[in-house]
Image 1 (cartoon, rainbow, N blue to C red):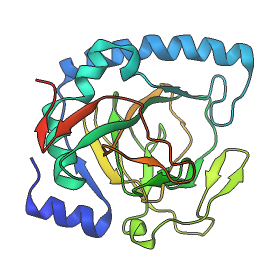
Image 2 (cartoon, one colour):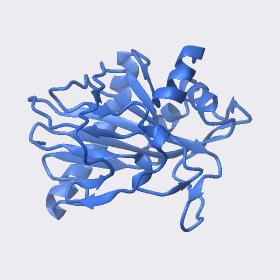
Image 3 (cartoon, rainbow, N blue to C red):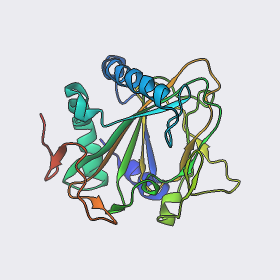
Length: 240
């Protein structure tokens, strides 16, 4: 699945873009399931009010989807993810975390620069984030932006702000990563990234799927992560 050029880019730049990795039919099937989970969690969010990252009618994070849906568990175990993760991380791979992120037209501010490790300290520090566009992600509707090569800085201290943990406060705007429906960007967990406001009339829908080596643990407590299935063992798919 990965060329030598792509492997080199990941090592040097910290990310790889995969255009049209999943077809419309595949994406429609999982999006219809995720829409239902988002609708339920958005309703609960409206009743409870703002959580740390989720804001009613603006941006909503819905977590642990694969654990709750057989189709999504099968999807995150797909051979394309197995080939990708075993090439970049190692032979034994487990789902680290998964969540949908729906940014609605009312979302009028940035989600700040951060490294994914800034939310949970992880050992080993390197894991892989796969950001899949369930609909076209554009600059207008709040696609993600990245700072290429920033993963090479190692872990950077994060400060808590009213819109999330933030690791970079400088002037570099970064590089936008617009994605067509079914396309995906895979990036290093230490890569600086953010997203911008949704200035369109539609909801920007993304499915975030993260993978670590099997046996990854919380760097402070030592607790093993168990948020999803093992998808690869000795470099081979566990499911199908």
